[in-house]
Image (cartoon, rainbow, N blue to C red):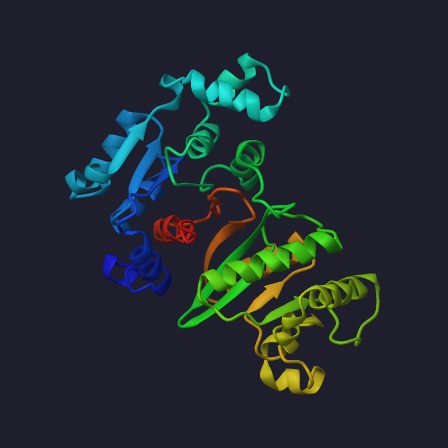
Length: 331
């Protein structure tokens, strides 16, 4: 993807227009990764902080970018291992509420994933984006311990923005909650509806199952049907754009919906797909990505008090750059 093609991405453009004069910054804990460094060619009007070995990162920037002098104008490099800050140690100990010793805190905050999260907590950066080397757990654990959930949220979840041409689909939860309870799945759906609206996408939400409107039986079918029922009971306007239980074909294919769910206001029109567990969600998005030709942007983390975002370890430079902008969508 060329820089020109990147800047035709509508969500990047709309977010950039909102934030271009806000002096925002994003810290990337995996600053030595080639994909992270390559992603810098797409960045404009955002300050970037890379964590890692300064000599290694500087050399890679010079090797990867012909216009490296331009890159160095908006990029800063910090080596956490040589930058022990006692104010961050004190904050970390306070956040852990006696669950960690000073020695343990001093050791942990020198790790880039913890250091980046603490910079966000003290408002020295606007967001954290990591996960092309770290696992999801390694990115989210410091966020759970330090940033914590936003008010009104009891869990953190994720969704993927799946794109192919002009089509945009949202899938959740594919990365965080392994086997959510009914209450958690209701919250995941609410969080995903909010994210969908933040992208100016009108949600049509399908709660997926192996059954459509009672065609199958079993506790898993009952589970998704009950989630749908409680969502609508608590939010009457959801009746117009939330439905389940639906099989994927009934949710996505209009001619199938006419047969399986003729009375559904979502059937055949769904653009938001809620999976019963992480197994189904993770498998589905990867199949769409690698055999269906969809671009997978995310996972986009939902429900945190401040913006921390994960990346797939199979990500590329363009997706990293997109996530850098999308994580700033609330500013």
